Amino acid sequence: MNNTLISLDGLKKIFYTDEVETHALSNINMSIQKGDYVSISGPSGCGKSTLLSLLGLLDTPTEGNYILAGEDVSNISKNERARIRNQEIGFIFQSFNLISDLDVEENVELPLTYRNGLSGDQRKKMVREALEKVDMAHRTKHFPSQLSGGQQQRVAVARAIAGSPSIILADEPTGNLDTKNADAVMELLDQLHEQGSTICIVTHDPRSASRAMHNIELLDGAIIADKPLSVVREEPVMETAL
Ligand SMILES: Nc1ncnc2c1ncn2[C@@H]1O[C@H](COP(=O)(O)OP(=O)(O)OP(=O)(O)O)[C@@H](O)[C@H]1O
Ligand SMILES: [Mg+2]
Image 1: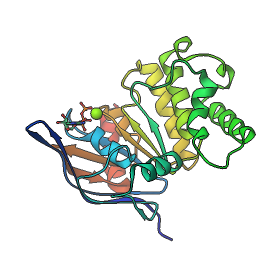
Image 2 (image 1 turned 180 degrees about the vertical axis):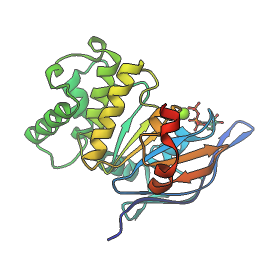
Image 3 (image 1 turned 60 degrees about the horizontal axis):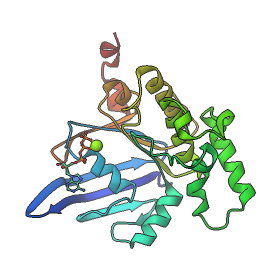
Image 4 (image 1 turned 30 degrees about the vertical axis):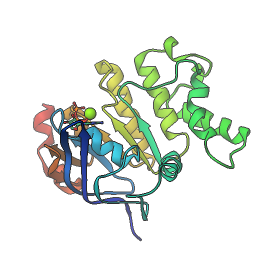
C-alpha cells in the first residue's frame, strides 16, 4: 500500500514585487507519509510559511510538482484548489484567525458550509465532535473576544479538524500563547496525531519540534536537514530536556 500523502519534487517559489525577485524556495524535495508528524524549522525569512502555503494550496509553486493524495495539484485552477483545500487541509495560524462576528460554533461550522452534500444536522454533529475533542464544547455560544488566547486557538484547532482533513498544517500555532497554553495546544496536537492525524507544524521552538517524529530544517529557501523518525529518535533528545 502506498502510504505517501504528499510528495514535492523540485518545488520552487519566486515572488515578484516591483523590480525585486525573491527566491523564497529554491529546490524543495520532500515527502510526508500518512500519519506523519512533521516539524519545519529555520530562521526568520527562510521560507517556512511559504512552504506551508504551498502545502496548503493557498498559493502555487513557480516551478516543480506537488502530488497530494495521489493527485497532481501543481497547476490546478483556483477553484479546484479551494475545493481540495476545503476537503483535505486543516489550517491553524499563529493569530488564530477566528471571525469575530461569529460565535464558536459558527466559526467551526463555516468551512463545512462550503462543502457539498452535508446536511445541517451532519454539520452540527461534526462541529460538536470537533469541539469535544478540543474540550471547548461548553463554550459554543461565546464569541472569540470572550475567550482566552489558548481557548481561541483550541477553537481554531476544532475548525481545522471538523472536516476530517488529510493533513493539519499549523504555522507557529503557539507563537501568541504563554507557555501553559502553548503546552496545552501542543498536547492537543499530540493527541490528534495519536488518533491518526497527519500533522505538519512550522515552529521556532525546539521543544515543539522535538515532539514531531520528522524534522525538516530550512535555510535560505532550501532543505538543509530532513530527519525522519528513526534518525530523530537516535539523537540524544534527553540532553536538551535535562
Ligand atoms: N507575498 C510575498 N511577496 C513577496 N515576498 C514574499 C511574500 N511572502 C514571503 N515573501 C518573502 O519570501 C521569503 C520567505 O518568507 P516566509 O514568510 O516564508 O519566511 P518564514 O520562514 O515563514 O519567516 P518567519 O519565521 O519570520 O515567519 C522572505 O524573504 C519574504 O520576504
Ligand atoms: Mg512565517
